[in-house]
Image (tube, rainbow over all chains, first blue to last red; front, side):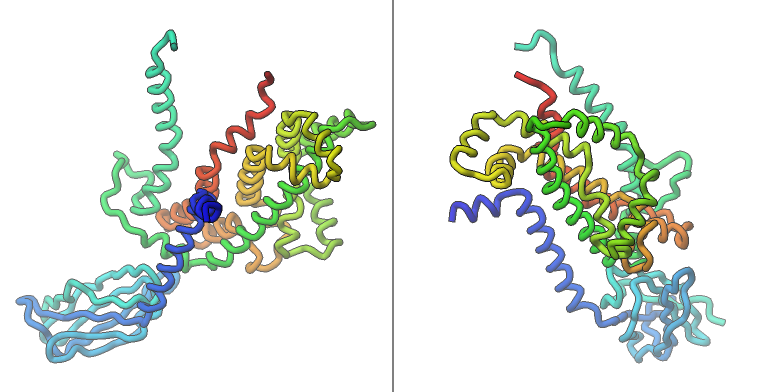
Amino acid sequence: MATLRRVLANRFVLVPGLLAIVVLAWNAYVFTHHHGIVAGRVVDQAGRPVGGASVALWVYNFTTYEEKEHVTTDHDGTFRFTNNPSHRIQVSAEKPGVGRSERVPVFLYFRSQDIDLSAPLRLAGAG
Amino acid sequence: MNRYPRWPIHLALVVVSGVMLVPFYWVLKTSVSGENIYAYPPSIVPARIHPFFYVDVWYAIPFARYLMNSVVVSAIAVAGNVVFNAMAGYALTHGFRGKGFVVLLFLTCMMVPFQATIIPAYLITGRLGLLDSWLGLALPQCSTIICIFVFKASFDAVPRSLIDAARIDGLSEWRIIWHVMMPLSKSAIATNVILAFIWSWNNFLWPLIMTRTADMQTLPLGLARFLSYQEDTTGALYAFCIMVLAPGLLLFLMAQKEFMRGLTSGAVKG
């Protein structure tokens, strides 16, 4: 028992062991949070939810962002992409008559990380 | 009791250490901020810290594969260095005919740069059928002359009577090395481990010459490859540098006490 304790307390065992635990924990987290879900909300300039707006997902492709997918917001302004493959994306929204939002860059900690955007996409500049 | 105050020495050491750490700090700062390194005036503290350049690096190249290659090759090189250097070092503690010539040969070979021997090394590795393999990558680094002398210095410090006692007890030379000399030479082992690891980890030329597929490349080659198509991404480049440096630094920090002792053992007598 004392020998085991001495071995475990050895820094050449302790440090790699702790690193291995961190890596395993991180991989477990990644494994349970990589469904590619990107969710958020679209609002107008007054902060009211905008239903029927078209939201685009832009995926980083080596040097540039390319448009991957479109979804339409629900009546409460929420949207949800379910198969984002990337760790570096942008989202933008537009609705004729209400306006369009800026492209919002989103950086993720790993590919396909599930994320609920805290800030809504704000439509402005109705045309 | 010291005649002079020690704080001026410590202060000077702190200042010198600070100066030497500035480049490392700069690399670390840029890797988490992506700030332009040529910006003037330079910012000492990054404005916004984030880890996303590390994520970029992880996905831009097959980092995990390169990391595994580097780890396996370094592990083979470290194991080879400890085993072969200990055997050679032990042999040099004995008197035998031609020992002076062997030592002279070792010292002479230290002056020949690896670049000069890379073609024979390549041909030999090719004849052994080890090109583009982990063992082939590690083979030329499995023994280093400096580390042989580190073991020799450490073994020289072991009392001769101890070896004689072991021999009288019936231990073979092989068992004397592993059961008597090695436990008494932990510093030399640590020095061998660290030096072999760092040299193998940072080796660029040999993996460049002998790997044929991208799957067998090591981290320094990955860094060069990364540079070739990510030259506009300062943050990611510096993040890559940190990721390559981190294992060596960690190993050194863990074993620095033994490392220092190993390098200085045999330097003083009495």
